[in-house]
Image (cartoon, rainbow, N blue to C red; front, top):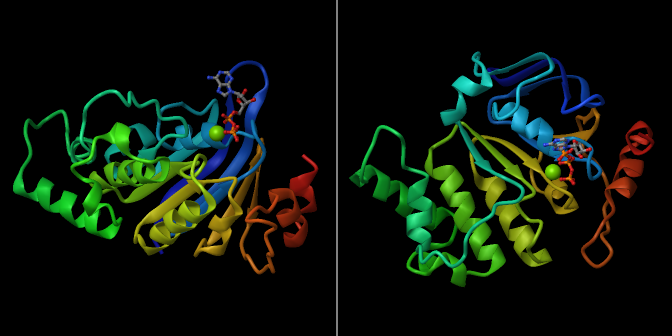
Length: 243
Ligand SMILES: Nc1ncnc2c1ncn2[C@@H]1O[C@H](COP(=O)(O)OP(=O)(O)OP(=O)(O)O)[C@@H](O)[C@H]1O
Ligand SMILES: [Mg+2]
């Protein structure tokens, strides 16, 4: 199987202390990885290294056999805290089409509009395209931003907490959508719902990386919530809880 991402003895620090330490992993083409872990554990930092927004202090990352900074157009990304000026009178369709803009190009082609239409169908947002982005609910807006990330036709989709501000039902819907998408997916989440919906492996990041290959658990969420520490107890990941 072709590898999408190879991470080899990766270390990273912003200042003195390492935030990520000795991380090695290979992610195969079309794999679906969930990244979980405590606040400050290094998940967003890890994702920014994959995107080439940060450079490893030590070690190496390869994305489809090249460096992250050379493979940016292969990755669709939805950051954790997207600061969107909701007063800007942009329609949802314009926000999605921004994903089709590139430095080389002015204006949009028929293909751009076809991609917009098919994403709108697949993500169930066709009825929202004419609405202003500021008028959408949190869950609707996340779907539009997901469409924008996919509009680049990436080989890898990286989402950092895509469901942080949406209700339980919308979380489930978004994860259902993600399950249906056929590309390499890396999704950071505190929401245990993700683990129930088609994930191949779970990466628990807390300075170090702990990989869980199989997810075979009997989860009975209380009022839709399930602590990830409880989950790791069930997974037998005692090392993951103690760091
Ligand atoms: N730009 C920065 N400069 C210095 N330290 C940073 C910077 N960004 C993050 N850190 C630190 O790096 C560590 C990891 O942060 P990171 O944002 O990667 O965690 P996270 O796992 O994404 O957390 P959360 O679940 O809260 O999103 C934290 O201790 C944080 O304070
Ligand atoms: Mg984060």
